[in-house]
Length: 145
Image (tube, rainbow, N blue to C red; front, side, top):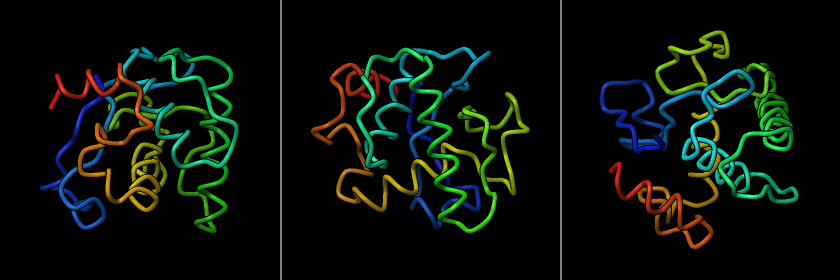
């Protein structure tokens, strides 16, 4: 289930000011691809990338896979080094699944949050207020917070 993860006991505290938006299970080929986790990833990708928008349907397929890979490639270029694995997978926050997708302790979900925070500071504390968020995701996040 997509949810708000506390960063109080981690080195991410300074970046995210207490929390970031997380997924409970990894998203990608061979992963569980829970509806709300995929929907959160699709929403964040649409929010941070200036590309044709993905359908916010909560279904993992080739378009979502390719967009994740595109984001990973772009994030590595922006950072000037490989900080994300280029594998089309967004690993769950704790890294327990497919932990090889972390490079230098950074996961795709962290950078998606960082870019969302940079572009939409006024919504980051509670993304349910973002008018672009799909109602299904808004409702699911209300249940999980």
